[in-house]
Image (tube, rainbow over all chains, first blue to last red; front, side, top):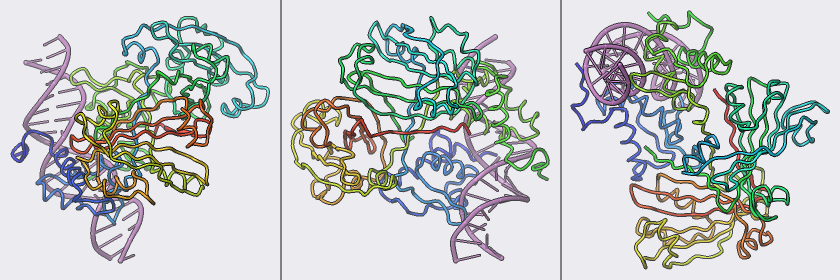
Length: 242
Length: 242
DNA sequence: CAGTGGTCTAGACCACACT
DNA sequence: GTGTGGTCTAGACCACTGA
């Protein structure tokens, strides 16, 4: 009863629709702002169910290629709406998958009231204490990342007991605080003396910083700054448009 | 005939399934590696069609929350598999939406054979010429981004004729070369003398670099490095887990 | 009001991967 | 072989929103 597999070679109908539209955009037949045929029309044209055409368009919308609006239809998105996915793996996985040996060393662990800048980020009241951890992650004995982390003890009281001798706080948190939303900020800075030393750099060397805040429900769990030597660290993402 | 809207309040069944699973993960009832009920079972439990349960799981998989494998089932993903979407808007949009005035100035435009490092990136044969463009983007008269771009003239012969006096090459390319795949690389570096001057920095100041290669079909269209003052530039992404 | 997207159901077949 | 995910169809109802 299926009309499947009779039309074009071997790929899924919804992918055929998707690719056909992408082709038209790539080829310039469809320009930003242009109206694309409605789902019904596409279904007719490609001899498939409307749901199938719908899925193709939905995925294109999720990827930012088109913009959909009820009643008015589907249009090719302004290219400004583009975005890219960067994967942020666990540090040890990242290092090992690059073929290096991973090691870790704890620099500092204390429970103190954070400076105001951090306090605000953690959304803590004045004079509330938090767990402060500093550690270094090595790739084949070379410093790869310096981690400066603050943990909200109200959100994860257990953290005070954890040793963090053999394991980075990130791995610990992921195990103990199951799932969370996050905010990421990236920037570059010149390493101050102390940070430079920990990363085996010279004062002033460029450092790539990844700043992250993590929430569970509505509580801020942790605020961390991850510092990488600018000369060697690269953050990559390749988007292959289907 | 629909059993819809009889169960829980007002949201879509597939979202209910999705959120229910996310809840269980957030709450720690489901830990990384744990097996999730199969689609059929979920459908039964939530009194919905299997497709509906399927969609919930599919989306969770796309977001990196779960990992699916035929025959063996669906498991909670190791948190390492997480990823974040960074949007990369057009430079003028980005600047204006931050409330600044956008301006642009062309520094250099020439057609020459690129150095080997660039030549490889563009996938060009030795001694092939390419269009080289350097320009600066300003936010309220402050240098915001220095753009160093190479364009493959084989892919876009028209580019040679474009003036790029009033318009950045990015905007031009997006208009002329309709859609493309891209690779992004981020890193930090210390500004050399010339680059520092263009960004109104001092030699050695940290610079945030976004490197991008773009393809149409299988041709490399352009290779660009975008330099931002490390002290002020921030790249942000906030992920809200549903 | 009417058109377009958004979603659902029920039943079906297929493909892959593990046993 | 057999179970699990992946996808399709056909028909249906709903919801938003622009004219």
